[in-house]
Image (cartoon, rainbow, N blue to C red):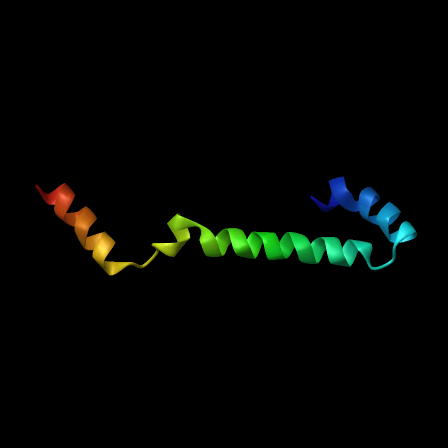
Length: 59
């Protein structure tokens, strides 16, 4: 990814020095929010759900 976006980051750095760092912070915050609100990740380790799935397959 860095190979693709490095020229953009360099040109952004020339225009506004903190720009690439702010952009990366926004991307990381978006990834964190996505992981936080993901239903799949929210249910990881949920014991009740695992037991329900096991009951469905044991019939």
